[in-house]
Image (tube, rainbow, N blue to C red):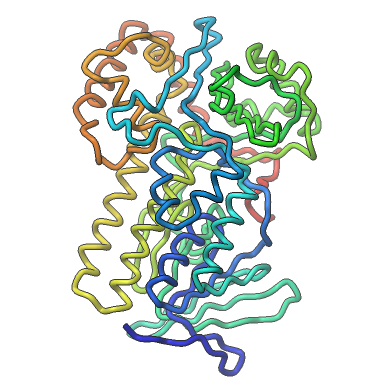
Length: 448
C-alpha cells in the first residue's frame, strides 16, 4: 500500500482520499479508510455538534457501530427502542411492532439519538482513527483529471481558497448533493414527493414502561407523523406532508406546526403539555435520486446519491451501509486491486437494492390498503415477520424475506382492489403532489 503522507505544497494539501461531508456517511468511510492506512481529509461545511433529523436508528445498524468501536458511546446517549408503535385514527387504535419478532431476531433493539450527539461521536471517532477533519470548509468544485490525481477546490469561513490534491473523491455531502451540483443528473423522485415540518419539544407524553423509547408513527389526512423520544426527556415531533398541504401555510412556521398538530387527535393528545424548544424547522421537496453513483475517481455515499421519505428511518442506515461498502471500493481502487470492479458492482447493487426495498414501502405507506394490512393482527406465511425485518434494517436480502415480502405485496394489491375507489383517490392525491414545489419554507439542511 502506498503511504502517501499528507503534505502542503504551494497551499495545496496532498492526500489519498478527499471526502466531502462529515456526517455519518463521511465520518464512517473516512474512519474505515484511515484504519487501512490511507491519508484521508474530510471537508465539512458546518461545525459539530449541529442539528439534524433522522434520529431513530435501526437495529441492523448496530453491528456497524460495533465494528467502528462506537457502540458503547452511542448506548450512553441513546434511548433503547424495541419497536415501533403505529397509530391509525382511521381504525381508532394503535399497535406495536417489535423487532424481536422479525425473521432474523438477532437484532431486537436500536436507539433513539439526538443527531447532534450521534454525528459528533462518529466525527470524533474518525479523528481518533487518523482522518484529517476540517470543519467550516466548503468544497466548491472538483477538477477531475484522467489518469492523474484530482484537484478539489474549497473555501473556509474566512474566504481563504484551499486546494486538495487527491487520488480519489468521496461525495458524502448529504442533501447538499455536492457532485450533483457540478455534474447534474439529480432528479426529484418521479414517484414520490413530500415535505416536513418538525421540532424538538419537552413535556410530550411518553409510552409506558418498556415501550418508552419506541418511535410512534401516526397517519393523518395530510401524511404521517413521527414521535421520537430522547434519553434526556425531550422528544422530536414532525409531520411529513404532501406539498399541497405545506403550500397552504399563511402563518409563521411555528404556528403552522401547532395548527397541524391540532389536525391529528392522537398526536395532539400526546402534546397537551408540550413546549417547543428553540424553533420549528422545515425540509422541503426532499425525495430525489441520481442516475449514477460512481465514476472515474469518485463514488457517492449516503444521501449524496438518494434520499427518500424517512418513514422507516432508513436514512442513517443506508448511509452507514453505503459508507462501509464504499470503503472497500475505495481501498481496492487505491491498491489497483483486481477486486475493484467486483467490489464497485456489489456496492452499487447493494445500495440500490436498499433504496428500492424501502421505496416500495414508502410509496404505499399512506394508502388505505397499507394501513389496513399494518393494523391487522396475526401473520400468514411469515409476512409480518418479513416486514419487521425490513423495519429493523434487513433491506439487503440477508435473510429469507423475498417470498414473504412478495406475498405481502400481493395481499396489498388484493386489499387495494377490494376498496378500489378509496385507494385510487389516495393514489391520485399522492401522484398529483409529485411535481408540486414547496416555496413557502426554507430547507434547514440545504444552503440558500
